[in-house]
Length: 411
Ligand code: ATP
Ligand code: MG
Image 1: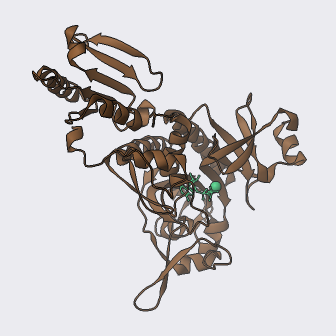
Image 2 (image 1 turned 60 degrees about the vertical axis):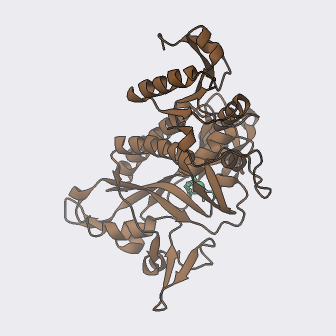
Image 3 (image 1 turned 45 degrees about the vertical axis):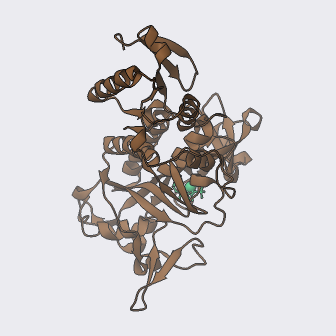
């Protein structure tokens, strides 16, 4: 993409009311736009990164047999009444609205109920199982505090997968595979070293649920980390009994702030029993389906990457999620030689399938460098009158700041 065509502008200052580092930087770099607290729009650069994150999650969900769907955000209250989750006393973050005919609808904050109800059309026998279905879909939650930028939206994207199995054993096997897929996702987006499988409350059907917590200062959660075992325990379940069960000593754990980037949960038969999702086993006996749910917030993940990787100059994207791989900066000369060489290199790189943002704007070197640091593309190629004296290009690594001169022909 030619930067002269990119409609977004960078800015020196973030809006005064924006207190989260992730949103401040993403707004300044032109990746997102703040509509209001807890509601952010994605602009071309931001959407490219978000889509890379989505692509990685989608690959890993497909690998464990997930089938992609897309459910409605508008929710029929009857499914939620059946599980006791329509009542505002049970769920305090609903957004609800009224239809013209007076009926109430909800904006989904999660999708266990509608998907369980939907599966009644498709599951009747043990032969129909297992099933894993997932989506990338917008959720609405009337969050009390929305001060963490895209880490906590009132409207946000979630990847939610739901598993349907014949029994607890089959469920556990899938659950383990999902856990490994999650580990892989966080490694692939550049958060492997900081992200811990964290034991959290399991609700009424399982001893534990597992959260994926990324250690960083912006985190709203407190976890207790065992570095050697690469695992952690959430505050809510930290007690002597749990430590004994997990074979951990309190003195080996370090207290850390962390962001919950993902969460996997055994649901047992809570939803299938409430909504009547049953199957017939080999003997023809009717049994409730055993379920699990598996969430990741792609937006929260993007915000966490920013919190972990950015520096004082701006964003620093891991290669796998960067909006472009190369930021090509042309520092134009009077004679037009730089432009010619840069145009040519841009064409060649693009034809090779390399994603290049080409700063072909009529702007000064200082502005181009500052914008490039702010946008945070992993590799920066600078073509200038000076570099052309040796027929070369200056290549700078955004993360390490290492600079080298590379000859155009070898490049
Ligand atoms: P939290 O405790 O942080 O409010 P949660 O436990 O309610 O989150 P889940 O219901 O487990 O969240 O949602 C699954 C995933 O969706 C989370 O792990 C997180 O990545 C993402 N997520 C949850 N709430 C938000 C939000 N308000 N904004 C952005 N992402 C979110
Ligand atoms: Mg959670």
